[in-house]
Each structure stands twice: as C-alpha cells, then as structure tokens.
Amino acid sequence: MTEIRFWNTMGRALETFEPLEPGRVRVYTCGPTVYGEAHLGNMRTFLFEDVLCRALEYLGFGVEQVMNLTDVEDKIIAGAVARGVTLREFTTPHEAAFFRDLDRLHIRRAARYPRATEHVPEMVDLIARLIESGHAYQADGSIFFRIESDADYGRLSGVDLAAARRGERVADDEYGKEDVRDFVLWKAAKEDEPSWDSPWGPGRPGWHIECSAMSMQYLGETFDLHCGGVDNIFPHHENEIAQSESVTGRPLARYWLHSEHLLVDGRKMSKSLGNQYTLDDLIERGLDLRAVRYLLLSVHYRQKVNFTFASVEGAAAALRRIDDLRFRLDHARERSVERSDLRGQAARLAEEFGAALADDLNTSAALAALHRFVRDVNVTVEEDRLGPGDREVARSALCEIDGVLGVLHREEWGGAALAPSAGLGESEIETLVAEREAARQARDFARSDALRERLREVGVQVEDTAAGPRWRRE
Image 1 (cartoon, rainbow, N blue to C red):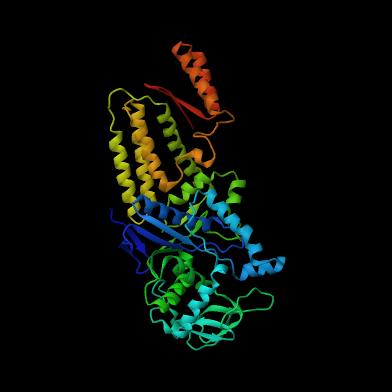
Image 2: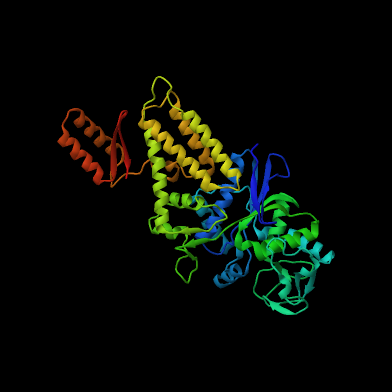
C-alpha cells in the first residue's frame, strides 16, 4: 500500500499515516452549529473532509466518519426563545438546509450525525469523571475545567496562556470561575432557557464537552483523524484534547488535520463587507456549483482559497475541457489494430493521482495529473489512434478518479454531458454539424462556411479531423 503522509497539526510536521486498525480509518469532523445557513467558508471545510474520506477509500481503506451537529448553543437558544418554539423545532429547518447544501456540492454523507441534545447523559458522565479526578470544579452552579491541572495544555495550538494571571476571578458568559484561563463544561440554567438535569443542578453542556463525548461514544477513546477548520484549533480542539485526555490518559486523536480559511476577492469573509456568500447566493448569481466544487478542491487544503467570480469561471473552463474530451471519446472511432498508448496513460494517471493524494492530500497535483491525461487522450483522438477498447479504458480511468473528485460527470449534476449552447440542444447541434459536413463533402463551401458561422455564433467550435468533424463549446 502507498505510504500516506499528512501534516499533523499536533507537532506541525508531515508524518506517515498509520491507522490504529489496519485497513480501517476512523474520522471525527466538527460539524455545523445549526442556527443559520452555512456560508462558503464552512462548505470549504466540509468539502475538504469529504475529499479526505474519498481519498482514503481510493487508497484502499475503509472509512468511518462521524460529524456532530451542535444543536444547543447561545444563538440557538436565543432564536428558539424569540420564536417561542422548542430547540428541535428551531434547528430542524437549519439541519435540512445543511444537508441540502451537502447534496448541492456532492459531499457524501458521514456514517453518523449525532446531535448534542441527544448525548447529554454522556457529557454529564464525562464531566463527573473530570470532577472526580480533580480536573474540574463547581462554581455558582456551573462546572469549569481547571487548566492548571493539565501540564500539556496548548500543545496543539502553541498558545501561551502565561499572560493570563492565575487566580484572577473573572466573569465569562455570566458564570463565575476561579481562573481566567478555565473554560466551562456545564452552564447553570438561566430563566426561560432549556435545561437538563445533572448532579450539579439543571443546566446545559458547554460547546467543547459535546465533541469529546460524542467522538469517544462512536469512535472510541482514541481514533485516527480529527478534522476541522483552522479556526477550530484554539480554543475548541485544544479544549477537547484537555478534557478528553485528562479523563482517559490516552491521545484523543493520532492525527489532527485543519483546512485554511477561504477569502473573497483577497479579503476575509464578513457580513459587514457583504462578501459572506451562501450556496443560495451563488445560485442566485447564476454560478455553477459544479465549478464551485472544482475551485474549492483545486487548492491544497492547507492554503487559503481566494474565491472570485473570475476564478469560478476558470474552474468552469477547466471542466469544459474534460466535458469536451468525454464527448470526443463518445464519438471517436476505434481502429481495428491497437496503435495507442492509452492504457499506459491511464496507468500513469492512476499512479500520479494516487501519489498526489498520499502526499498530504495534494489535490492540486492530482488535478494536474488529470489534465495531463486529458491532453494526452485528446492527442490520441486527434491522431485517430484509438485502439480496440481504448474508449472504455479512458472512461474507466476518469470514473475511477471521480470517486475522489466528484466533479467529472456533468450529468450527475443535473445536466447533459454537454450543456445546450444558446438555446440549441445537443441533437440540434449534431444536425447542424452533419449538414455542414455534407456540404463540405459536396464542395458547397459557401453553405459549409455559413453553417460553421452559425455554429460559432451559438458558441460551438467545429474541428475537422481525420476521424471526422468534432465540435466543442468555446
């Protein structure tokens, strides 16, 4: 099996990936807080995690992915109270919107999506164990993690808490605590807020304890990969490590992978700048979400993506080149004798594509391998050198890598293999191309030229090859 290396945030180095169980990878990914629509930056992280799981499967592993749904949190509670509905009634439409967005970007579903509100007993048990071991304490009805008890705190993020003075009593979310550095595990109930019973009185869990309880519930005390965006590193993932490992004495995850931020026109996304887009926003602007997926995966997950409308058009153009190849393959003839090296080209694609994925999920290098293959196959078709079975070899090679990319088959995104041009369907274009070819063979060059111009006006370029005319969109 190919050696796989990932950049482990824990230690900040490339490390050889070795799962706990041969042939099986257990992955925990931080999911959405379901109080509003996910924006494009969120979707970049979810897409990275999707491609990671697909890539591991491509490289020969079975993958079990768990992604939590945070359905109790200050903004959720405020929204539910304002509308006079239960938490579940408030979060259900937002959950549905999240799953709709996953489907729109062809992000495959995780094995489980546990909700925080359905795992409060596991959180209470974990908190009780932290209190018993001296890592947590009660103050004003709330429970806090005592950071002073964790000598290794900060090893994931490298954060230096020395600037925070020990013993300084402060208020945080209106709950008292001993030390400015400590974080809340259980929040005492407030009037008119939902709450759960606990040994410390009614209240609700803090955000960080949710992921510790749910990840260990479904993947064990130690699992292989923990993923999220770079904004999760501190404090969320740092706090997860502290509370989980203080109870178990074992590493929570062996490898920590984080995707970088998404920029819009070179600037950080924000509502105040008016550049925080949802998928609905992009659809309203007429963008092709297939091209959006391609754009997001074309940049290495540890590099910032600069989203622009021009970059989406560039991604669409790259996809058109692949669509054009597929059309050419469908219409090219296979000669009776084998003259091409297409099987060798397909083998090189598989080798280069797999090597790129194994090199810290280098999707940009994987796409470069794909486009080299597209170029080589186009040359083979142009030179009329397709041998017996070559068409299916090329199709199979594209299908195999699309198990990771999820963008190559336009028809799976709700369109034809090639979209209509300026109101003309594929059959109409084919008819015009055939009429032009008949005119050309009859040496009626005036009509042939007129038909070529008609096709050009609707965005169709015709190429005359030894195997016959080929058309593609400009």
